Length: 633
Image (cartoon, rainbow, N blue to C red):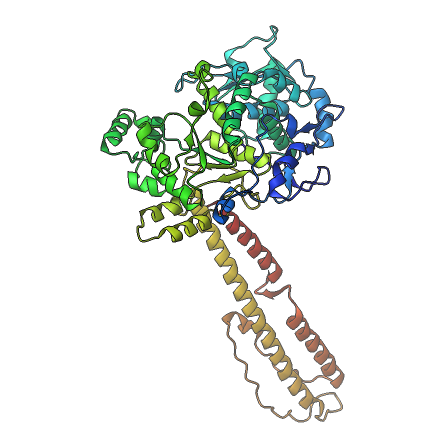
């Protein structure tokens, strides 16, 4: 998924937006998001974006309160796109956009949306390395058999024009640059930073003038400087526009369902390869489950992760996609009317029409791109999975509500895109929490709806703060990380908790001993003062010595609660001193006691200065680390 941070709330440099949910589209469509554009500060707006969805329908007409709640768009809280690049970025653009000596070539692999993510990262990497970008090469997809090139799917001229102020994009590599094996880099670590990229490749680029990268999927860090995050948004939502034939057909199909009223787009992912990779049961009976089991046994490498989990454990962990029956009940639980128009994105489900019967029964107005397309419209693209995926993307983007059943690159790209165009409603099923209620027959329909709405009240596509969390790809099939499966996180968390407890124990001991020392000092001062007063009234000889022994005063009871304080025992009263000396000693003792009782910095015990302020600082550092680690898990 692309993680973006260019949504600002009433930013001074960006136009204000209305708070009305019904005007979210118009506000986002017409609002200018200031961009560096070119040296002349060309403006990039949503109206010139890669794909602007059809406007969301207003919740008016003959709808019940439950239906209005279902179709209602989330509050965008005043956030809107803002591509206002910094002055430093714009100054650097003057040189980078005219680069003619260094070139970056990127080979993008995978499906459509996986390739989109890699293309976005390629532009950012070219910007970081200050190199010109050759139009990315799309590797042949061996799974889907799609050999489409960049120009077959995307609008090349629009791509180059939109990015002309950020990165120079060329159609092909100049003949002066030769490709060698040394220029191809296939292995990159995950989450590489701009600093790492410069240290790794800048010398090679300066010397050879050419760098070829392969395998960029999820390799670039999600935490980038603001200008680079904005550049990602500009590439994904403005520069990467589908080719004109695909875009026009996609909008034609979208308008055919949109004109009839609000509609839901769901991404079920019930294809055969999904069942094989997830290790889940189809729910279609033993015949279909046995087919999947045989395929999985013959190709064990297809099964992705958590090999020691049973089918039931995988399902309850939220790894499996919701089947048609579960999706139907989920939609009803959210309050979707049975007359709702539902667009099903994705490929042919395993099991064909039988797999879709439970959903078709509850929601008769079920359509796909094949049922909406007219005769011959899809014929040129039947063997082009990327083109069919692009059409699904356009129709799903324009839907009033989007619901996914399983993670994936398309789902994650749509989540970011719908947020960028005004936070269109996007519901992510909390499968770990809702599946137990599917099995509980004692839960009535009314109670089930209440539970479903409560579980997903914060999963409606509204803005989410990024505080206290690192950015990572949002995949619904990874399950929740906890102490049991967190690995190193669990060990680090335990260490931090132990450190926190040690700090608390040390702080308590120091405070207790400090209070004890202050008490001992006070009692010692009182004892010595009393004995000194008796001595002051005694007769003195001519040579300054007492002629009679001072009267013994009642001993003050001094109890010590800490063995370490024994060194601070009461001192015997002074003898053979003058009255003036005694009074001077009294003031000194009084000042010492006042210092001890009021000092909050620390006390010297056995020669060690123990600072309570230092312990407090250590405690807050430990508590911050513990909070961070626990937040990660």
